[in-house]
Length: 411
Ligand code: ADP
Image (cartoon, rainbow, N blue to C red; front, side):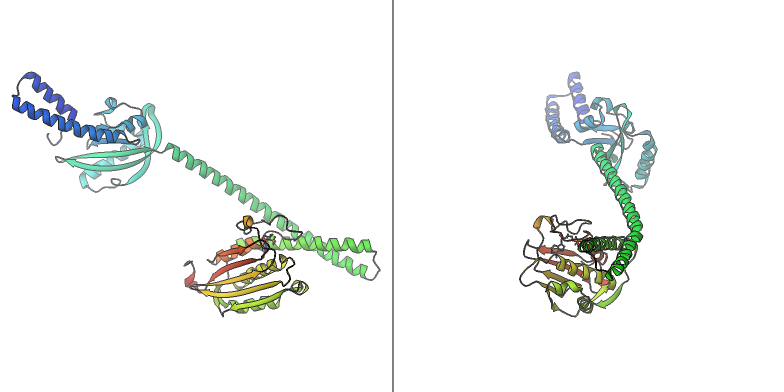
């Protein structure tokens, strides 16, 4: 075989047959030819059977772009039979827009020997019969025989994968548009409600003062009671909503502060409800702990978790809320544990979602935003928040915060 020779085994076998016919070879050489022929055919068949069992296309070319090998996969993907493409230029399988770049790349490789896409898998476009363009994944290898360079490409049709990817991208874009619209709507509602809600509260207090001098009828008192409660619910809901929106817009004010001291402050400021419900507060195992974060926002986390523990206490014989702080490597973990009504297993993953409330809350009021705010704050500090609970046996919330700026991101 000369260096530029691209003769296939099949061509050689045909040549031997012609020699035989012409009677120019003696019996000994003929026998040798027969053995070489059998060995070559065996080797070719073995290679073909492997190549043809591939669903991907396997195509080999010379350095002059001539196709010298074509498997079944290639026929399926490109729609041409082997005999239609053998010896033709491989550029017939490329859209015209890519041919110039291919020629340039090939020339550069042959001159410099430095590969760019050889040995890698790249995504590109191909042309099937009927000039049908489709996306492919191409893995290219090169090999040398008698100083001649050849190329073998394994080609996978990725039309289906690309289609699925596109559907997914469209769905994500659609979901993002909806969320953005919803966010704008929530912002508008929250903003527009602020003034009327504050006005109702103010007018209510004014009305109460005016009526205080008179002996109000029981039904008037009853109506006022309902109004007070409704107005309070609306105020709390709006406050949570505005908090959640503010979180999105403002950055953490980072500082290093003593978490155990903040905890004591929060306990000292706990509202009436603790006493009314006879809840015992146990500042358990609180090691002095410094953390790195936004003090006001961490206060909000503690207040939300403790308020929730109070709200969902139910009526145990000895209501207790236990809070403890533990150092844990680069992080400090705070635990808020109560022995209240607990959270059914099936809802435990969802309680941190915005607006989610456990169904049948027995008239306990809330916005379903408290825990989502907690999660957002803790995660904006690089920490984690999670819950352990058994229905009827209380709930334990954990959250972790970094000790120093350098602990951030080590979780
Ligand atoms: P809400 O304003 O309803 O309290 P949250 O986001 O703070 O909203 O809480 C979501 C839900 O998680 C609550 O409606 C409640 O059902 C449940 N939950 C939160 N904390 C506790 C707790 N300590 N014990 C039992 N259930 C709780």
